[in-house]
Image 1 (spheres, rainbow, N blue to C red):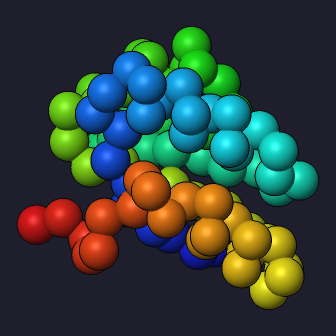
Image 2 (cartoon, rainbow, N blue to C red; image 1 turned 90 degrees about the vertical axis):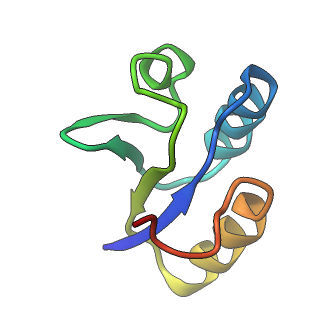
Length: 82
């Protein structure tokens, strides 16, 4: 399972993130601590605390992973939060 960290601190960014994730043919899960939601669900993501970094988890083949990483670039944060 691949994990990247994202920041979704504005409503506009959140809506764009959901739209971008929705076109991907893999399951994407966003987690904040013990809580998680489907990355393709705006309502689900709005139940998470969005003020801090979030963990995005997924499994994908190398081609899909490469496409996904490009789509996620505007939301990614460089390293794991401390």
